[in-house]
Every structure is written in structure tokens, then in C-alpha cells.
Length: 294
Image (cartoon, rainbow, N blue to C red; front, side, top):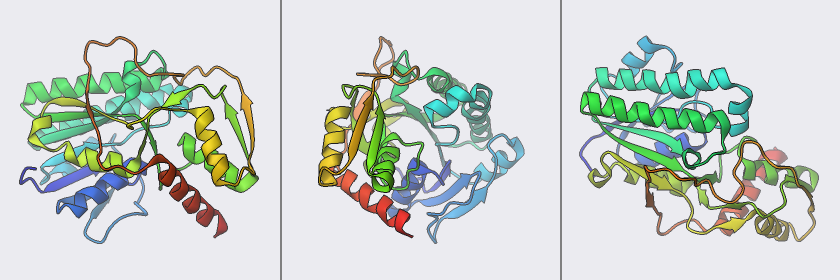
């Protein structure tokens, strides 16, 4: 790791961003969270800026004095992006460009951008397009301004601090509340889940100089079919969950793999040791049950 200490995390109040902030803090970095809402997970040693990534003056002032930028800001839900294409352009593409502009003005030493495995895919609708475009902006700004960067392409995340925009969180919450799961698919859909804490730790490992100007793929170590995943979840509920499959083809989500031919491939960064999928799901069930019991 480098001796750089001051980090600002855009979108740091959210699901993944808050965990990255925690991981950075645990390793001795000075962390500032920038988000449109106050973080409920803010640690005592972390600073908080409530702001809008579309406000260039605010961005310029916020980044001043920092060495590293992480950008997790924007619309992260694929279906929400599909329903709000103009907002997707504003927050995912323009917002990223404005953060890049502020970063270069302040001579930021490294810029880390949260992208997605969907950049490989023909699925993903406007979400995929926004990530593809933003990756190109990162590379162009970095080359023009001699700024180091790392692009982090995340696979399927799960774990605590999620909400209904996260598919696994949504499924488990419905199981806890209603004793049933309505799944839109035939169960053959395949994912490589990675726990959000593992993804966060890998995101900090990406600060290592060996990942300078690289594109990294952060995903799970094993593939699992959704049908098998639902069986696993049901067993954790003593097989008391009513599971219904609705074979509807998704217009926005991939079925078996996000990969279609793309000449710019990424290195895969793997967490070892990592949080086991079964244990991670059990922890998530316990968290959701506790929240719903309040």
C-alpha cells in the first residue's frame, strides 16, 4: 500500500460505499463520506459531506485536500436506470465526469470508479451503457491529466446494509415477512455472488500500485443457479417458504453470464479467505428479521 492517507468516498452512505469507507478507516486512512444523504453508518473518525454530485462548485471544495477518490455515486439499480434514462445520464455519466473534473483540478493521485460486470453484456439497458461510457471518461481524464486510476467491475453483491434494490435482499425480506418467494425466472439463471464486505476489502486492496491503471473484476469464486440458491434459502427456513417461479424473460438482466465479446477484458481479483455464501445469507436473514421485528 502507498502512504496516501486522505480518501473521499462518493456514494459512501450506500450499500457498497459505506463498507468501503469502513474498510479504509480500519486500515488507517482518513475518510470523508460524500453523499446526497447523511450516512447512518458514519464512524466517529469519518467526516461527512451532504451534497450533490451535479454541483461542480461543491465537488471542487469537497475534494480539496484529498489524495484518493472512490466514486460509488449514481443510480445502481438496473431496473431504475431502465425507467429513468435521463436521470441515469445525469447522475451516472455527467456526475462521474464532474467528479473527474474536480479530481483533476485538485491533483488527485488516484481515482477508483465503481463499474459493473454488465459492461461485458448485451443486457443491462441504460445502466450498462452508463457504466461503459463512464469507464471511457475515466480513462480519458486519467490519460489527459496523468492521474492514476483503477476501474472496479463488480459482480452480484449481497450482504448487510442492502435494501429492496438488491435482488437477494428483496427475496429474503419477502420470505421473512410473508413466508413466500415469487421469483421471476425459471431458476436456471446463474450468478457468482460476492459478499459486500469481501468486495469492500478488495476495493481497498485495489489501491496497491500493481493495480495502477488496471480494470479489475470483483466477483464470487463459485457460480450458483438461482433455483439452487432458493432451495438453500428455503432450507434455512426449515422448508416452510412457498416458492413460486414465474418464467418471464427479463429485458434488462442477463440469464447465464454477463459476458459477450469485448476486447478490453479485466483481471479478476479474488478474496481469500472470503465469507461463505451460506453463512453470508444466514447473517442477512438474521439482520432482516431483526429490522422487521423493531
